Image (cartoon, rainbow, N blue to C red; front, side, top):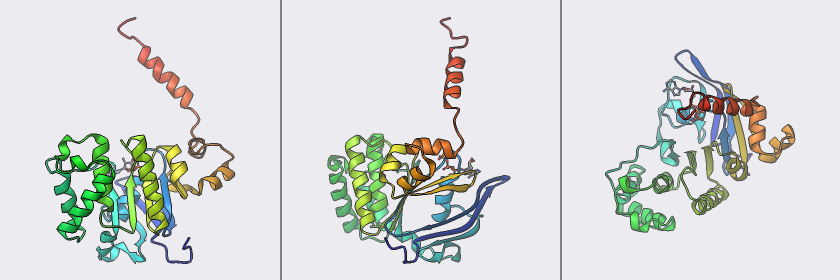
Amino acid sequence: MGLLEEPVISISGLWMNYSDRMVLRGIDLEVHRGQIIGYIGPNGAGKSTTVKIMLGLVEGYNGTVKIFGRDIADGDTAYKRRIGYVPEVAELYDSLTAREYLTFIGELYGMKQKDADEKAERLMGLLNLERAYDMRIASYSKGMKQKVLLISSMLHDPDILFLDEPLSGLDANSVMIVKEIFASLAARGKTIFYSSHIMDVVEKISSRIILIDGGDIVADGSFSQLKEQNREGSLEEIFNQLTGFDQYRDIAGEFVAVIAEGAPHE
Ligand SMILES: Nc1ncnc2c1ncn2[C@@H]1O[C@H](COP(=O)(O)OP(=O)(O)OP(=O)(O)O)[C@@H](O)[C@H]1O
């Protein structure tokens, strides 16, 4: 879909280092409307760093990042109104109720208070949280908080959604709803760019999977393309193969041996 259109995200020659540690080594990437991108890689590979650069939260990078065709370094932050973000660890304002929090977020995105409130209440109801709307977020379970975050990222109908572990803490029913929401949003031309370590989810919901390792992209394609190229069965196996990891049994064996060493009951 829309490959002839200008990409909504265009990254070229992106390098980033923190003091002496080089995290990204020349990432080149174009993302189009309607794509659901699973951005995966080992812990510390630089996934959050890439996303935070696109959100304008991390500076000091080399290379060019364009969102909706404009270089984000040109100082115009208007693009931020057209994106939504679910961070991995969120600063939710625990002392607020969901009504107060979501209405506040809606207003930050330029919505009228009444519109944000009505929309948020309906979305909360659809995720089975109608009775929690006026409760303090501090009393919410992990999954309930995650739903509030998801709603806060979509309330203003953004064109690009960035999410870090979007299904974290959700029960199986909610996972099915959110997967379907992503598919419907993508069908409406929205772009979803998310990171996750849950490979069977990534395998199922992404139209395109991008694997980074060692600061660079080592695989990029649909799940069936990656499977063809790597002759491996599951995305988990492809991930392990492409990141050169085959020692899980040895490591687990040693780990358990260390636990058993000098245990108090021996
Ligand atoms: N603010 C920072 N200052 C210094 N180093 C940082 C900072 N943020 C990230 N890093 C380092 O950059 C590297 C990439 O981190 P990043 O959070 O982007 O990885 P990730 O791929 O999102 O990892 P995970 O899968 O564990 O969430 C790590 O080595 C991390 O220690």
